Length: 403
Ligand SMILES: *Cc1c(COP(=O)(O)O)cnc(C)c1O
Image 1 (cartoon, rainbow, N blue to C red):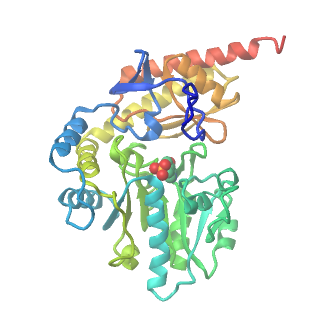
Image 2 (spheres, rainbow, N blue to C red; image 1 turned 180 degrees about the vertical axis):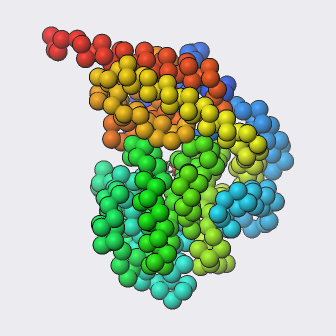
């Protein structure tokens, strides 16, 4: 064993910020040495109800006293209940629980392919995805996301994904062929820089799927579970998918995901066609149900919409005050982005120095993904800290270059 105690033995796949968060209270996260940060990253849109929400803590600890794991060999009452609630509140009629977003997408991809195979068309296995997409880090989902930096060096790219430019109908039509099984898209790109898919384009996707008998797959892993002010982002456009992957916010910080589908879309997923050891475990199901208790309570999503409007208005003012730094405000609900003129990673570091946690995204965007429970005081505090960060970036710009 190495004795290099100062250096980490974790794989160096992340550039980790030099703070260690030890506990949290609502929208605040506190380090081992007592520094308090206003957490407008919420993991990455994961802690949907903030840190240590009493209802979630109660649900998890109560379940921990009973049973942790049973396997999917036995019936799962808490999972049945959560699945039913998800179906009642969405387009879906079938649910498969997973442990992560990428696994939810794997299930979605397998389901779309199996749908056609079960109908006698195993040649229809290709899935069209969109530039700037992010669907996870498994071998299939890096191929779906299509980002070269995630694909390179990991052997032959998984076959069956055709990527087209964002919002380009002609390219999309050209990519649809006799082997196409599905179109897969995030209604709002998260990692890609908070790009909204225009409503008319989403409507076109639905029409094209209906015309060609394709499955429409929405990746709502980041946009789902109240993040946009609706339970799911597809409600903003009135375009329902056939298959939808969710994760992140549904667990409120506990790892879990799910693949939701219509009965028709799920019709190929018969006995023995898919499985998981940990997916749908009692701890995750207890927490998922507790998250829904809060998010689906009357008035909660109205509160998210009101808070989001206030935040967005304040950010528009901030943009006017810092035209050298902020180019544009993007996003929807409490999934907002600052498209910057200066490097986003510098801004994230300055925000952290001002006591605010935010997350960088593609296209030089800084993401604000606060817990959905924030109110006026957290909005005001966050904007004051963003103002400080923007000021610090401007001061850097004003400094004469290199001594
Ligand atoms: C985070 C994310 C994923 C991957 O989820 P993991 O839990 O990290 O596997 C996939 N799609 C989208 C849109 C995401 O935001």
